[in-house]
Amino acid sequence: MNEKVKVIFILLKGVKYMTNKLSSPLLNSRVKSDEVKSSEKWLGYLLGPSGALLLNAVLATYLNVYYTDVLKLTTVWGGAFLTVFPIISKIIDAVTNVIMGYVIDHTKTAQGKARPWLLLSAPLLLISGILLFVVPQGNQTVQIIWVMLSYNLFYSFAYTIYNMSHNLMVPLSTRNTEQRGSLSVFNQISTIMMSGILVALVFPMLIMPHLGVDKSKWIVTMSILSCLALPLTLMEYYFTKERVTLEDIDKPQEEKIPYKNLLKAIFTDKYMVLILLYFLIYTVGAQFKNLGLVYFCNYVLGTYNDGKTQTMLSVIGGIPMGLGIFFVWPLAKKFGKRNLTLAGFVLYSLGSAICWICPTNMVVVLIGQFIKNIGGLPCSYVFMALFFFFFDHLEWKHNFRCDGIAMSIYNIIAVTSVGIVTGLFNGLLSKSGYVAPSLINGETVAAVQSVATKNAITFSFVGLETITSIILIVILAFINVEKHIDKEQAEIKARKEKENENECN
Image (cartoon, rainbow, N blue to C red; front, side, top):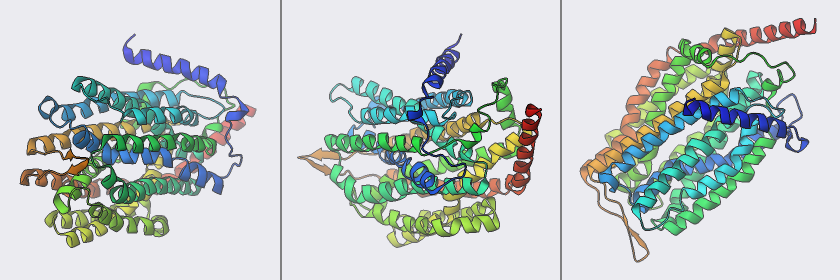
């Protein structure tokens, strides 16, 4: 028995144990209605996820800064450590995503198949989030081992469990496309509030100038954020409900669909392949941008932790995001989610190109960012709702659901891309001669970067996204599952009603 099979076997035994324990009324969902109500939207899909999403958003933007500027790991192994380590770690993360997808698809409890894992993830996020930053002083070998173990504990274990279960809650909550779309919007608002407001506005303006490269201040700040994830994730657990899963909860256990059949269903469907390719290319561009943002503001457009440059970029991006809540969904209903997203990327590519042409001119960059962020609204607000259509499309096509496996592939793309991009970005910094700031007499003193380093940072922040957004326009032109989804969902419903009638007879 190979190691992967052993891990799956152990997890499935854990699932069986968990199934027995989750029958307690204490763990029941507080959502009783068959229809999606306001409490579910606000508490389960807006406020509940905010703790984990905030923690992840901060880590996505600033963990690499902690590694390069505070721990000063850019020179370890001649610069190779921060290049190789993220890639290897994300390969591990990809494997755990596959395993987690399989486990979720084989979880059957009174609380659903994805929700129970939210409950488990809550304490894990707290513990692993703190361990990321309490890296011991002194011995470099000990530091490297701690960084590798804590990073994988968070991303390959704790956040994988959370993210897989969290992302499946919308498609499993209801089959009603209107209600599902509404929940998806609330989910996206939560994501945008955390990453686009708190992390993008509050952190650069108020938090980062205070932290500098003082390790003790980083530990306190990140420990507080990790603690917030626990009660809020528990709130998400209690105020969500898997109505789609409950449709079959009383049916006898059906024969398991072989893993290879699930994969075949996904990778032989042209629409599914295209949407996964779309997500891959989008993630690569977005991750380079996210990693480059802080460095771009510190060394190209502004000065180190000046408290205003990154804030100004975030404000100019936050204005469209705020307005988008009101007009994106009406436009998506009128023109279609695919069509609106495609048009958005036309603006997105234009805005990125403007920033790339004049990266040191604040006015030009702000104009470009404003245009770019207007163009990014459809992708931000409607992509997941569009993606969830593919789950129903596959069910219509094959008469079985493969949500867990499909979401695990989605997450594999996300995590492996992030790992590879992080490694490449750190490699660019190291090869271009990046110099970390210093802590002198309790004050952070920034270094002067070379032209090569500034060019590498600029390409990461705006250059690559210009290219990827053009590619995305082409891919979206071939994705049109939305056109038939209402008919397919109606046929699924009719099929299930017929099956229920046959069982009764």
